[in-house]
Image (cartoon, rainbow, N blue to C red; front, top):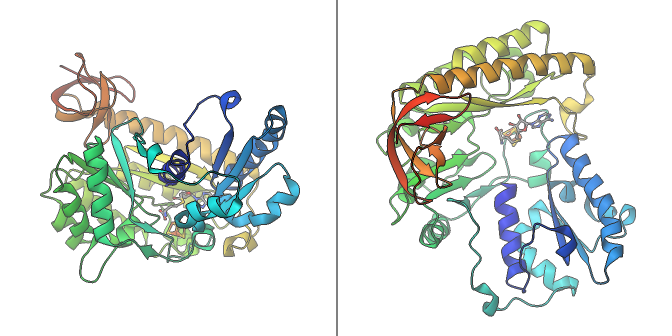
Length: 399
Ligand code: SAH
Ligand code: SF4
């Protein structure tokens, strides 16, 4: 989501004559887009901002914009601690970013003359379809920094997806905090997926992050016969213990989760996930439940996080587990996940796959395995080939 938001903000800056650079010394402006989901993420953004003080001093006229969720949480008081900051733009202000730039008086107005080429590299076009979150997971700061759910109109989503496909992105990724909560009157998320996949030039559709609550038999029935919908789902489960899931206020149990994971697997979806270790009420036994869920589910990949208390969330009131316990559990889980990922790659040998090329000889399969081809192909094309063997977390294809 931050990538998509960064692209959106960058497009407004490009319309004002800015071009992108990877090199800080060449830059006249730095836009820092931030995350505040965990303390560590926020801390990194702030320490980068601290280092930009010297950068700004080195050349007259340099500007700094601090945007995103940490900007939303900390607000304009940031300017007191970081006087080098020119503009703060919170995550909720993304739709009004252009107006904010105008109001600041620091930036030239937008001109169509600069609209020439704003296509990013890569094969995936990101399309935000909803913002905010109506859940209230007890550890999570997102609802307070991003606000309640706002679904974008299907008309706008389809227009944006069509534009991305015409610009040369064969893969469309639909984005939202609980992306599959999207709805519009009697139109469901599954209907939207089918509509996006039917647009000219769209080869593949992905989405992130779905919430287990909306993975229903109806949803699966609507998408299972549409091969353009990628056979991979990133479904954050957080824990394998029903007690911890209850304390996290996730709204599902281990048992209902396993039913959904089985239904996904039965339809050929590879599943990856997010997991949190060391939630305040997590005992050794609860942690074992997470390990056994991970094993049973056979996740193809997992992002594992140490629990991070976020001010203002209900869980932040609870006493923390010792840091050593978090470290230990994280390491055990990371090892387990690595083994499972390699096993998932290993199990693909001999299977036929469609690889969407991201470089001349590397790309992703529909079920989201990273694959290397023998021959070189045009970036953005889909290559059908058989998996020869897996090398760690890379599939080696026959052609
Ligand atoms: N909306 C998505 C996740 C958004 S946050 C969902 O509900 O699935 C992305 C991930 O950050 C979460 O899946 C969770 O694993 C992690 N996360 C969120 N808050 C956290 C916290 N306080 N400590 C550690 N990890 C956290
Ligand atoms: Fe946070 Fe839960 Fe909403 Fe995901 S569903 S953004 S974890 S509150």
